[in-house]
Length: 192
Image (cartoon, rainbow, N blue to C red):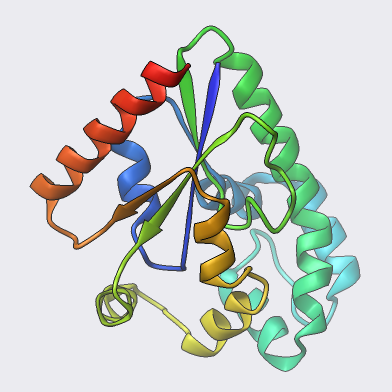
């Protein structure tokens, strides 16, 4: 099975492009939201780590945002609890899809958390800063202070590009992206 990882900046369209591959997709952001709503275990751990901010169930993202805004170190506390859970979910997803030709991993901190394996195919989604900003502004409850702090966790774009096997330019034009994805998919399957 080929593991295809989609990496890039916050708001560059990773999830959108992931879906275009027509393969099972593991979306870490979706899983994180699910944990906040359904995992009592995570709730208890986060409440213990951030008692001032996590006071009610289910976990509210706005409370986590307040915790991060008040202290950069709180990001570490949150990730220490959430990331191992996401890794378990990812491993379950991979086991469940082991007979598929390939799977797509949409994990924002894929390289930063050293989840990548030697044979993974890494695709960098490249988008213009102004386009990303325009898209982020449309998101409900977007907090640019938090976005800035989260960006600090990410590797510089140039390093991500260097570590990638392919770069897909996202100009947010569906037809163009479809063509690009099809081309990349063919190359991946031909090299398998």
